[in-house]
Length: 151
Image (tube, rainbow, N blue to C red; front, side):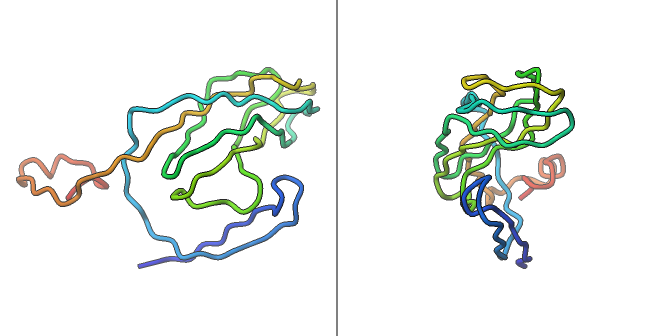
């Protein structure tokens, strides 16, 4: 059964007009591959940050192929800010489409300046793996398989 959810976004990334669209959503089960890559989140601009304030910083674009998913590495890389999220400019695309990440939302740890070319963080990028969901396993095995993977 599909539920509805709204997404809000800025039409031009961090500088656009706020827009809102409603979509049908379903729960989708997937597995994350253990094969992936690291992408460096490097600034394309100089930006002032302030303690406990949220800011947006442009980064060197990162291309994501269709079906790739990302996880931020929580290890600190910058003394002035911590990354809260990565984003693409304009309307967010579905995971089935290729995407280009172009900015990060950061929270200032202390007042200071982020320089152009600074490493802000690392992004783990993983391809989608397919689950063979119709394999018949004996009951003695399936009761030990975690919920989303259980046939």
